Length: 412
Image: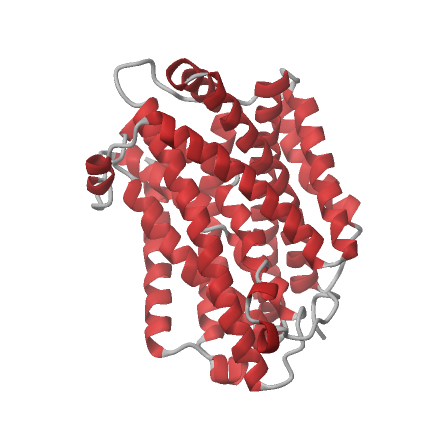
């Protein structure tokens, strides 16, 4: 029994090339440029300049590999990653993974809704709670487009990505990129425990657990893959999809850090919130740069919130084989974000903390993914090559090591 009820479409890559099959990775790419990335990358650039560029580069390369493996798992098995966990792990382990995955979904939605609320406050001076409710409503409206098939939703999400990209490119051009400092930032290093904590948050904002769960679902039951040739042809198209989408997301993340490092890092007042970043961008780069920054944040909040809710559906259906109405799902994950906004918690701090929580959840999605994709009895002819498994295991080790360092620093 497959998790998704998505309509089957003949694998057109066999006759028309890969372009019609692009899309799933662009949906998951939104998770890599969500409002949490704004908070962590702005903080990194404003506080440490170009120091943590290497974190974005490394985590984006890992993201490409991870999302490719997730897409491959769905193609090879016809099941999402949560469903594979349910099929191959004990009931107790599967339920435990479901509980932590739901916590991850709530942390994800917190970041998206808070980010959209901040953007609406910057643009229209709306109260944060009102902005959060509007963000949730727009995200729900985007999700309803899926009733007309995958493509309309993917086009809408890709359009949101285009808005974010345009805003970032303009701001980078205005900020004055420093190529030498950018190159030096690719050398891995830290400056104190706070930079380690921030790096873990950046990792959580870049390699997103819910995107790992979701991507496998988007490819698991979408196309007819009756033969090994069909599966390999589809996998080739999805590899192209992942490389293009993740490259764009990586450029966006790098652009955001560059903007902060070039325009906000230095002798001026410290930048501790997105609102302060917006104001200082207006002072340093002009009103147009600040406006496009706020519009990019708004598009990010709208798109990422809808994708996060969709991932929550996949998590519940896969681990529990149960489905709840989309409206109920939206309300359940919305409430913590509304509470945070209503009680006056600093929204930027809430965003950064949510990304640290996401960083804790990465191993629980990544380790099963590597375990399943290396097994020929599950993946058939699409099982990982030895080098792929080694690289994926190395990525998992790096992520887990950063999480252990984060726990240690937090306890201290």
